Image (cartoon, rainbow, N blue to C red; front, side):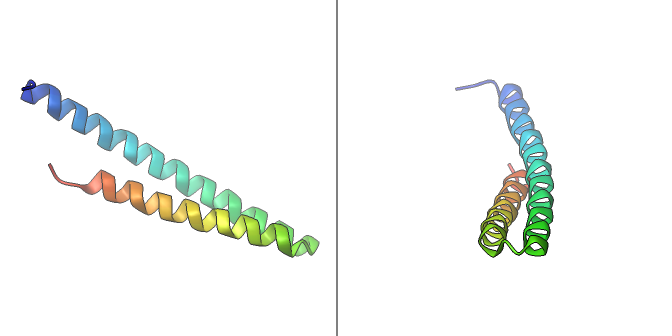
Length: 73
């Protein structure tokens, strides 16, 4: 099989990258929410709807990365 120490390092690296991706998704979600607010202020409801959908997708992606990060070995 594989070296157990090498496998543990790979698992650690995957968790670390998942945590980074989760933070990135959270930032992108905040950006999308700001775009929603600006679009509503300008009266662009179709654009606001699209930005809101993107924010929801990013929130879901964020939660999925957090689940992946917290999985036990």
